[in-house]
Image 1 (tube, rainbow, N blue to C red):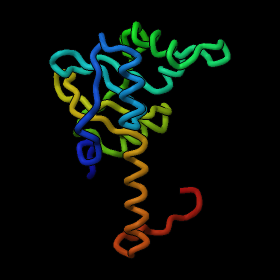
Image 2 (cartoon, one colour; image 1 turned 120 degrees about the vertical axis):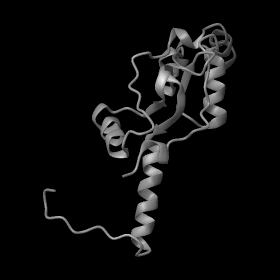
Image 3 (cartoon, one colour; image 1 turned 90 degrees about the vertical axis):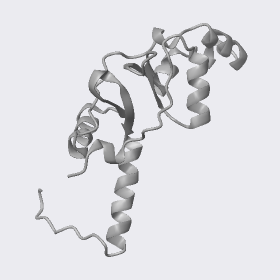
Image 4 (cartoon, helix red, strand yellow; image 1 turned 60 degrees about the vertical axis):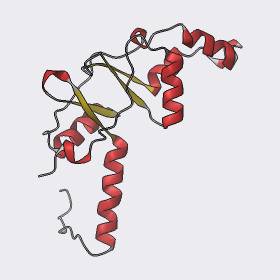
Length: 154
């Protein structure tokens, strides 16, 4: 059996509630990530900010607001104003199959991984599953891994 702990990213970029949208946007751009967990002082998971959340909070360029003005606005808004708190999380001992089903069924982009006490210990994303799929396909191409043929419909 393979578990979330086998695939998750452990070194997670995080923010605190008081950090600003400007900080979140900069972090996402520099680290090339789309999900940033929000934690308290004891690294307990309390919410999530996504790239999509930032886009919703951005004033449309059609309004004639340039990047400098948007940065000034973002610098005054804490992430707590836009973060999601109704986020599904998983434990490190959740099976990868369960995690994949959650991502697929609910169209989530990530699942924060928390231990007892809601302490953030990692994150698992769609990209992690794509990397796994690529590795499995490479193993199949190399003849290391062979999947049985399944009849149509399975």
